[in-house]
Image 1: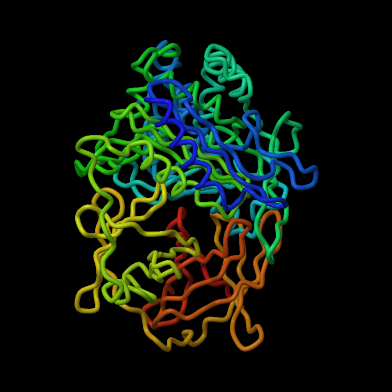
Image 2 (image 1 turned 90 degrees about the vertical axis):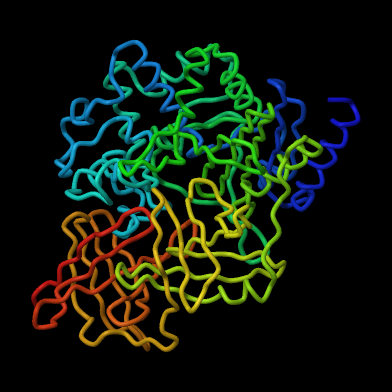
Amino acid sequence: MTDLDLLALRRKARRLLAPWDRPGSPGATLGLVRDGALVLQESAGAASLELGVPIGPETCFRIASVSKQFTCAAILLLAAEGRLSTEDEIHAWLPELPDFGAAIRIDQLMRNCSGLRDMLELMRLSGTDLSHPATAEHLLAAIGRQRGLNFPPGTRFLYSNTGFLLLGRIVEAAAGEPLGAVLERRIFAPLGMTRTRHTPSVTEIVPGLATSYFPQDGGFVRALHGFPLGGEGGLVSCVEDLALWDRNFTTGQVGGVALGRALAERAPFSNGTLNLYARGLEVTRYRGLRTENHGGLWPGFKTCFLRAPEAGVTVIAIANHGGIDVHHLGHQMLDAALEGRPGLHPVPALPPRPALGALTGRWLEPESGTTVEFGIEADGTPTATQHGLPFALAPAEDGRLAARRGIYPFTVTLPEGGRLAIETDAGHVALFRRAAEAPVLPAGLAGTYRCEELDTVWTLAAEGDGLAARVRGPLTAAGPWPVQPIEGDCIRLLTPATLFQGWVDAKLARDAAGRITGLIVSGARARGLRFARQER
């Protein structure tokens, strides 16, 4: 790379960061690694709005789920020493866990194919959002109440923070010391990652840690978060330290080169389809190149760790501004770094606006009651929203539209004849049709419903001109959550949350006489929860 090449890349990074390079705004930092060297790092915005401290090279951030690959690395290092096997059944290390009805292997936790329901979703559905104070014991209690799974282990993919919390505890059981101590001694210290640390408590004082913010009413507010963080997301780090970690994939200083290969090794589901999720990394292709990447999301913090090993390029993008799409930011920086590379596939063009217009609106998969809504942003970007979480869509090379968001297998075919096909994990394709335009709530829906696996009661009653749920869970009360009709026995409950305005899809259960006996509720990462109707 010439000095002029590097100059052009630096200017590109500054242009990408320009929207947040202004007083009174949090922002982001961008790093580019080429052939094992951190060749640039540019930043914009404030690490602390209160103190007016700018983001700089030494600023640290909560990297949230980018932590998962480090937890997996600790497991693999212990496995290489014979202290555990990735094929061990999890009860061998955590005998206190309930019987989930199927054997779950350590490797299935690392690959997000265990079927375990996500603990953060379980907490939210019981009325406890990320902004509420909670303890590790509360999270473990939510896991311990489960008796079912999202699906049989090894058959599907669904992102689950539960699995990585448990992996962290398995590391501690096998190593005989806290997860943070294992990571520090085995990974961070040998690699010189002096500003990376495991910080389970969100109240712990961390030198150089940026404050996180959400945009609100033309300004910003502090992003609240009260949950502890374990093997699923407990690391604080920075661009420089993540660049040191990236170099280890090729040098093998820690764990040998076999460690990096094992982290990025894909495995098939039981139907033979390859899982895009390896071990703490998602492995996909972008513009004809293999990428190994992961995102991180915690209130006000966002991280993109994006490797393109065939090109010798890695991009690291981290923000303390909850409104920045770091996944898109990172890929824009990767495009700039790859420009002129022979054989690089062009970025596919979006379908014409009329074709996209046929996609907009609400769609329903009648059997499960799953809904998805499509729209088009002012700049022409198509978007999809599921369970309240909006995400941009980008054109795929096969003519379909795919989620422009990490760790979210979602590819949609433009509708034909009032139907559209959405492919998700394990090659699963679901057929959706347009939902009713003027739906009404089912008669007799008001009442009290209890879910044993959440230890939670939802009371649906009249609220204003409609129906809403009041929630009483093991820790908190919440609500009212508005209840919306979708079609027939399919309904939606709006679930306000710190990160976004969520919703859950629900379908009524009825007896042979047609009486409502309960609700079958599914969120983004917890499916098939049964709420039984209580007798009056």
